[in-house]
Length: 213
Image (cartoon, rainbow, N blue to C red; front, side):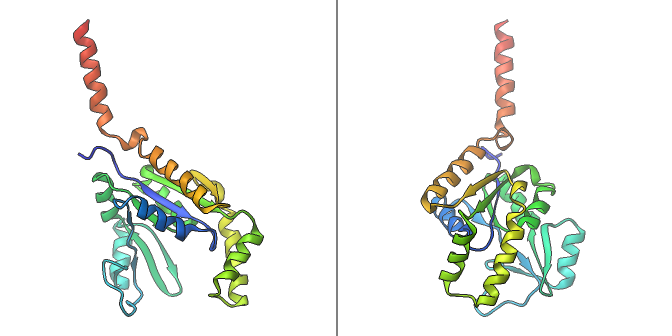
């Protein structure tokens, strides 16, 4: 048995709040942490590798996995299914390895309600202001004005679910937010539930105590 159980670390935020950057920094901080590889029914794009970028499944395979409780969370987006396979995450947890999820509030809720929900650590990233969030989206230079309006509307929907998370961080300073994120992860790794060896240790203490009587 591993010294500790792994965590399902969920990071959610509206687009532009810094979730992707914080995820990359977290993975660089601890190389043992891995990103959850999603499953999808959409065709592979050029250069994508099955099992690395996505697990590419047929509609029938995906629906079978859902029916057999093989997905931690899943959704139907623009005509294709997307989801998080349970088996590799369960194996990682038992092996003491943390798995990072970059998902929205609906996916986070599904994982929290799954059979592995007790091992989740969910963190929501808020922008310092709506004006700053809009500025970040515009400064990317990736989207048209129309797309930015849609992203802002979706962002508020995401923000409205902030209170469904274990921790909430306001990303007003990237490095300071990252330091707080590392502190949260480090502390949660020490949670009683994540340390299965404690049961045997307490039993040993009890035997020692009884031997002294």
